[in-house]
Structure formats: C-alpha cells, structure tokens
Length: 251
Image (cartoon, rainbow, N blue to C red; front, side, top):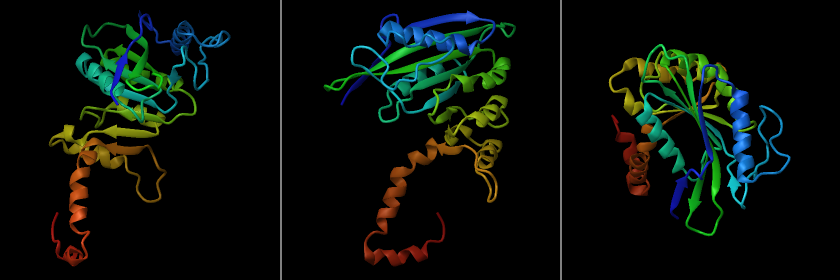
C-alpha cells in the first residue's frame, strides 16, 4: 500500500509572536478543523481542543495514537523530522510538536509558530487520515524555557513521546526538562560517536532497582541490530547446535 502525505489547501496558519500562547494555538487548531468541516458546535471554547476521535470532514479519519515532541537543531533537520513522521503508518502521531532552534539573530525575541493539518492519503479504498503538526522556532537560549509550555499542547489521555534525533542530549537543559513531561524517550546512540557523556546520560535514564521508573527509553541503534540478533538466535534453533551456546566466550 502506497501512502502520500499532503497539506490540504489553506489547512495551515503561521505567525510570529513575542509571547507563546498555547491557548491561541489550540484556537487556531480548532479553526482549521472547523474549516475542514467539523461539527457546527465544535471548537467554540477558547483555548480548548475538541475531543472527538473522528472529528473531521469528508469522511476522513483523525489519528488517536500519541503525542510526539521532536527537537531539531536547524531547519533542515526540522524538515527531515516532518518528512519521516508523515511516512509513519501504524503509529502516526495525533499531534507532532517540533521545537526548532533559531539560526538567526541571537537577540531575536520572537517565536515563529506554524500550525498544520496534514492528510495521509492511501491508494486503497480506505479514507485518508488527518493529523496535526506544530512547529515552534526560537533561539536556543529560549528553547529550555518553553519546555513548560509543551505539556498543555498535548492531546489529553494519549502517551507522550520525545524524539531527540541528535547526539547532543547529554547535559542539555531542554532535554532534561522535557523528561518530566513525557512517557517515552527515543534517541539514536549512533549519533553519539565517542561521546562517553552521552552514553552515561542514556544509562542514567534506566532506573536502578528500587528507583521510581522514569520515561521508557528507545534506541534506533538497538532496533537496527534486530536482524542480526534474529540471525544469531536462529543459529541455535537446531537441537544439534544448542549445546554450543555454552562455548561462547565473547560477543
């Protein structure tokens, strides 16, 4: 099944603001859903999202899976994140929030906000799926301060995921602040290189015995090893080679 993700005509709004108002973001999302063809009484409450799992027009479905926060270091990485998310199938996020570092003037006090309704089209007879994308751009000195504003943007009663594509999460203020508001963290240890502090930071995310469990940790590098792990395990499937497991000295 082939899929294609588009931003329908006029299903996007963007603006610059000196103060990040999550209520306004919710209102803008409500407006976009209403323009799409939602319930005539839906979305009237200022700063509130309509909690209807199939809110949308034209027989289109709305995802009801998870909230995803992703942190991009520049515009290129933000574009890659948006593209990768749009290709997801089984776990297409209901709402993706991309926090992007500003590459311009360090004294720029403004936030750039872009809000979109996107549609994942399918080639079969099943209806398209709509999902939301919010991109917030700020200078990196301000990013740590907006972590407290992310939580009100989550769709209620859904798990909250943090995706950190780069290897610079060790001792990062924004990363540490976001850990308090998410249920699961996804990193890529291949981006760490020889950074021992990054490995230590990952280890600290795994709670020791007796400690309260924090966010669950996922690693793309470990997922990439899946085929190799399966092949090695299959080697010991035949009974006549199972006894050789005891001879393994090093992996």
